[in-house]
Figure 1 (cartoon, rainbow, N blue to C red):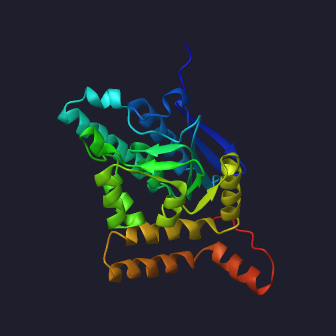
Figure 2: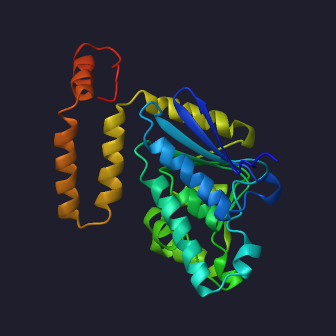
Figure 3: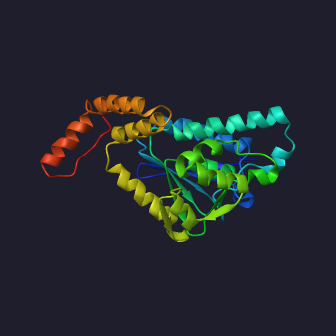
Length: 260
């Protein structure tokens, strides 16, 4: 019997497309899904030819989160280990050198929302609904949601979502800054690919350093964050792409960046 692929990996024009592939279960997350997602992330981290990464869900939902039947059978030690596994995978996703874009349609609940939060950018369909409903099950977010959600939408709004367990729709998510764009459902993948193509026109190392400056800088005080920014500014100024970008600007032409 062929092994089931819980996460599909496809490529299109220097973009990797990761697709959660459990549509009948609305892409619930269990150990097998997390393990397979982690393996794909590890491979993509070393692919210099891949400039951007899209993450989406097959079927009528992005992901409804962790497998409740699995969680129900876990003791305290097993639950902690499962949470740490999800956190490792999602942190690896967040730390990828390439920009990552979550394409959310239908439900992004619990671990599904936490997965989207680990991406750099979120674009959603008009039907999307977001929530951290863990308190309704007697638990709290375990895959990083209590940490990433406040950093993205602010403490007050994040606490409201996590304490009440309530869902928000696409329009509210846009107003919160949780997503940057809302599009018709049938235009979601096309929009994501177009966004990725726009990033392909930028210098890859500059994009990578932007991610480092923001993500690492948020973990320290302002002075240290600015010091990190200056260090990265110096590093990127030694690249071939910096010379190409400056030369192209002066010559009034489009730059041809090579990631060097």
